[in-house]
Length: 170
Image (cartoon, rainbow, N blue to C red; front, side, top):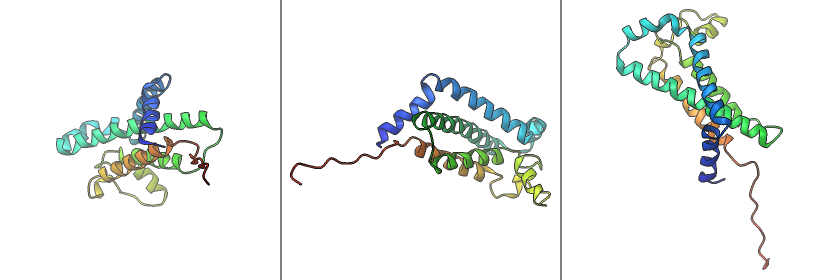
């Protein structure tokens, strides 16, 4: 499938009816879920008072980009489900990992609240926060973006392979 056809399918998932409506709903739902899971409503004031704009502006930008890519991936999955009745494992796996990574990286780095510390607590790891990571959790967000982009590219592929026609000389 060519670049133009993939781009057409991605534009369909974002701008065409009813997918534009789905995109907006999923975008805000993801941000809302991220706020609830990572309890950013509790750490909002602390986050902006502790960190400099050189950290929190990319942090906010990456969270918004992840939310947009999550909405795009879910719309592409909906389109794919409409095209076929079953899906092969792979493309939606990248999307799922990107969504989970986005939720993990969406917490306040200095706090011991959020999805990642809660999950690590199940395994006996206590006192861990994203602040312990070299880039304070931004690396998880970048990895999530990469996984979501790979998922988008795989989900926008054509369902069938093009077989070249035999020439009459053969």
